[in-house]
Amino acid sequence: MLLDPDQCYRALRAHDTRFDGRFFVGVGTTRIYCRPVCTAKTPLRRFGTSEDVAQAALFFASDESAFITGAELAIDGGMAATL
Image (tube, rainbow, N blue to C red; front, side):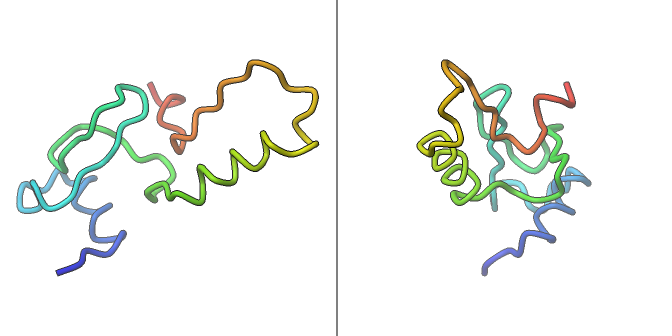
């Protein structure tokens, strides 16, 4: 059975043990994966997608980023800002 993102977010916010092992969340600050019972936060109320990462890569590959050198971009939905 597939879980929808809203259901996963509610389980994550409630640290619902019934969902333990059914899905995992990547935590950008610690670079580990957490179970729903983990205390990690999801500030944007959605999970990141591969398109989020692709958009950042496209920006760095474009002429619009020509003046940027040696930058590190956290694509973590605001996780680093909440610590």
